[in-house]
Image (cartoon, rainbow, N blue to C red; front, top):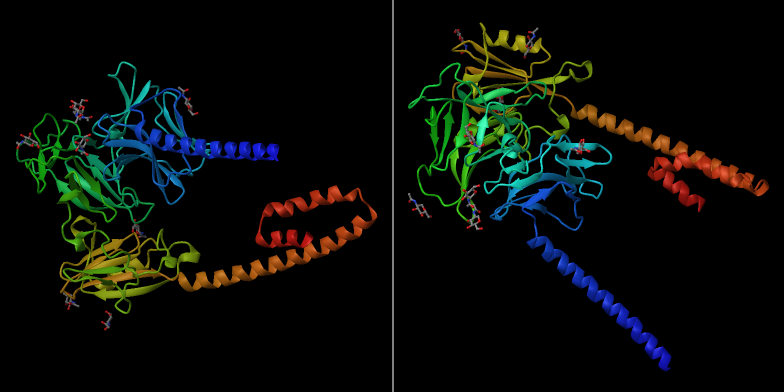
Length: 492
Ligand SMILES: *[C@@H]1O[C@H](CO)[C@@H](O)[C@H](O)[C@H]1NC(C)=O
Ligand SMILES: *[C@@H]1O[C@H](CO)[C@@H](O)[C@H](O)[C@H]1NC(C)=O
Ligand SMILES: *[C@@H]1O[C@H](CO)[C@@H](O)[C@H](O)[C@H]1NC(C)=O
Ligand SMILES: *[C@@H]1O[C@H](CO)[C@@H](O)[C@H](O)[C@H]1NC(C)=O
Ligand SMILES: *[C@@H]1O[C@H](CO)[C@@H](O)[C@H](O)[C@H]1NC(C)=O
Ligand SMILES: *[C@@H]1O[C@H](CO)[C@@H](O)[C@H](O)[C@H]1NC(C)=O
Ligand SMILES: *[C@@H]1O[C@H](CO)[C@@H](O)[C@H](O)[C@H]1NC(C)=O
Ligand SMILES: *[C@@H]1O[C@H](CO)[C@@H](O)[C@H](O)[C@H]1NC(C)=O
């Protein structure tokens, strides 16, 4: 009895101790994580994503604690290496990787002179290609790789902006801001800021939809004096500079010369607008929009949409209504061109009283009639549509899938549009695929049953055959399809 009691006691003690230590380690772990984010990373640093973190895993903090570099979880299980403004979780920068790595152990970020994001399958996904001594995050959110002298900056994230510029960050003609969803970008020309839409992936940089030329009120852009650059100033304007500190252009924000306490940023938005914000300490306030009328955005109502000023969205095809905000179902996947024989099936839509939102920036050809304009588009498989103005005779040929047009009262402005007929074909294919799949599955099951019978027969006579048989089944199992699993179950 006594020994039994003692025995029980020690078991429970061990159990309690284990539970206690697990709890201890857990609390220690989380508090350590919250308070000891380093302010510099040295050679030899290595980090892997923690599976228990659902949103952001900080790896490096700036001196104020306002910003952090870390793993940001996106699309449920992928990693974006990003710099966040901590209080708002707003993403200010992220590494442009060709592919987003998985939020799982083999993915790692290390610093060996270069900051490298890699996984064992693909190898290096992203690298700064430097030979620095430490990684720092400045108090203005600039991620820098420095030499040990603390002066030489080998690389900085401000030279590779994503979709955002912060206060005093230089934006030059070598850089591009790209919207998080991909199609829209901001670039600099010789004397202007341009916003571009890339609706056809094979055109670069795509169609310009906003061109802000320098006003040159205080200083002129001088040819041969080098490229211009743009800076978001603490005073609350987007300044264009060439040489010196006198701006050649000033786009002032609503909070111009107001004493805002927080930081400022501008971002190219997923709808193609360029917006300015300032931080109040609690939230971001919009104090600038490059495009104020929603109908002037490049695709405010989506593909094949029609924007009616002051009224909202409808569809170019007047027989359809937008379904969950779309005029074209996603199966129609409108991209590329209509040139391959298989894809050259389309139906034609016509609509009068329509106009392109940024036609002043588009190329056109003069034509005698709408018929001529339509024919030019019809004959050319890279053409997705044409818009014609009867009063001017301008024919706009579009080499990207139709986006949103603007409704106008003038019925002599007319549009001709091609709409890919993908839906029916896709369905037939799907059914055909299913049919083949079923047939294939049935053949395999039959094969499995026959094989099993044969296996049993052989097994009764020749024992030594079992192992070889196992090898024989191997490749089938490797395929891993559901029907094969059912064969395995049958065998058991
Ligand atoms: C750092 O690692 C990358 C990827 O493995 C490698 O290509 C690079 O040469 C390394 N740099 C140094 C300085 O060792
Ligand atoms: C940010 O850093 C700069 C120098 O690197 C310093 O002059 C400035 O005071 C710092 N600002 C804050 C808010 O810490
Ligand atoms: C921006 O460019 C100017 C002029 O080239 C330079 O003096 C300044 O240090 C740059 N600012 C940053 C944050 O790189
Ligand atoms: C701006 O605000 C700060 C504190 O918020 C204050 O110290 C400074 O004097 C103000 N400047 C102006 C020009 O109002
Ligand atoms: C930065 O952090 C300081 C204190 O750490 C805070 O007073 C300030 O409001 C923060 N600024 C921003 C822009 O978050
Ligand atoms: C739709 O547009 C066509 C061609 O422009 C026109 O003939 C037809 O009357 C319109 N239908 C409606 C319901 O507006
Ligand atoms: C287009 O313009 C021509 C002359 O410029 C005119 O004869 C014709 O009636 C107009 N068509 C329409 C539909 O307004
Ligand atoms: C077809 O259209 C494209 C642009 O949309 C143009 O570059 C090309 O020259 C056109 N081809 C012909 C034969 O007109």
